[in-house]
Image 1 (tube, rainbow, N blue to C red):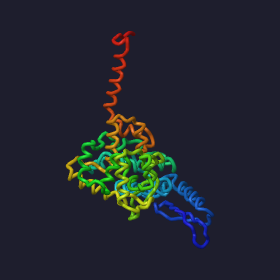
Image 2: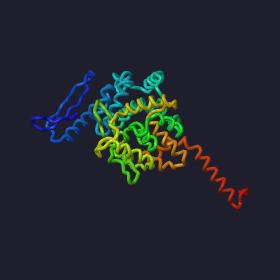
Image 3: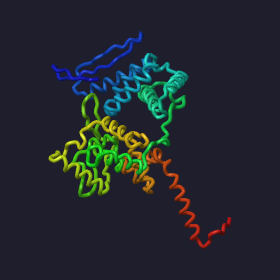
Image 4: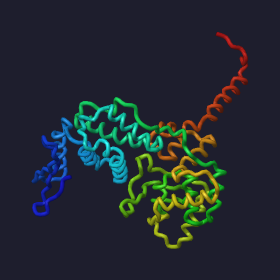
Length: 360
């Protein structure tokens, strides 16, 4: 990572090279006028030293994160690093990137599948290994990508989505006192389908009481004991959500009950874990099926689908980047809509004067 010299005000590039003995050595070059020049020099040095990929996977992981630092959000980097260090480095960390074979990856997959992880988590782990080799292949000319030769581990199929019906949600929310912080949190999550990070970033300024709208422009998370407010997941996540009158009134009464709340202060200055803990406690109290906080988003979609709302409108409300994401995630919840189409066609056929007459 390039850094600025205090005395000369010039930038210094630094990178690691691996010698013939496999020893990792730090290298530096001083005198760059701008950070951009220093970073580009670092990149070229990494490229040249890694062409043959005679470096350990653990070393390349650091190259990968260095390259991705301006592309991925801090929270994403942290999550990816955790999964790599827990599930990939113990198996492949000391092996050379160019020597890891498809058969070894299959053995690793078999080992991972004995640990009791969910199918979706197995797929997430697989994605981390795949991303390393894809980056090595695309950017550093790794000749063979072993991940392309094996079947991907796990399953991201969302047909096992958990969600509540409105009846189950009402049974749950009745265990929380109306007008309280958590009551409003769960009301917003269920009736808007917003993400928990988006909700925890909301301020009074984000609520348009005249138009019954909530503006989603940011997201919140906490890392290393610091509160972080950043841009939403994607550009499409920046959106305006229409809300029903009853929800607007609940939000308005909550804000008025906190007299003098600044317009740009978070409505709910708590962390995601607190919401999860409260939900778990009250699920047991209500005796309803156990789901995650994120599943309230799925519950909102299931409600909309049941009401016949078109997928394109659901896509816009959820802030999905592509309609295919919406359909791939929730398409299986539409079987009744297919029946509805067939019934409509039957009705049209019955109205036809030639009904019952079939000719080639």
